[in-house]
Length: 30
Image 1: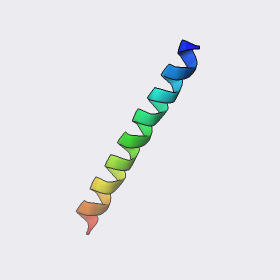
Image 2: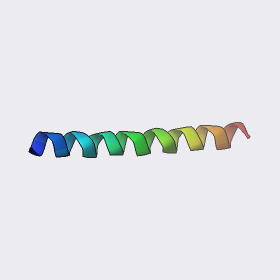
Image 3: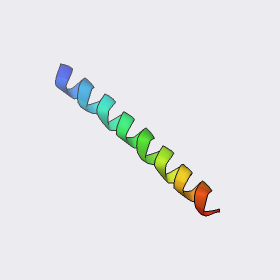
Image 4: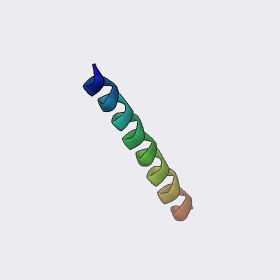
């Protein structure tokens, strides 16, 4: 259904944002 696809896409975007913030924070610490 459409809801499942939207949920997977939103989860993927949130995961990418989490990785981006994690990488930026680690880069700042180092």
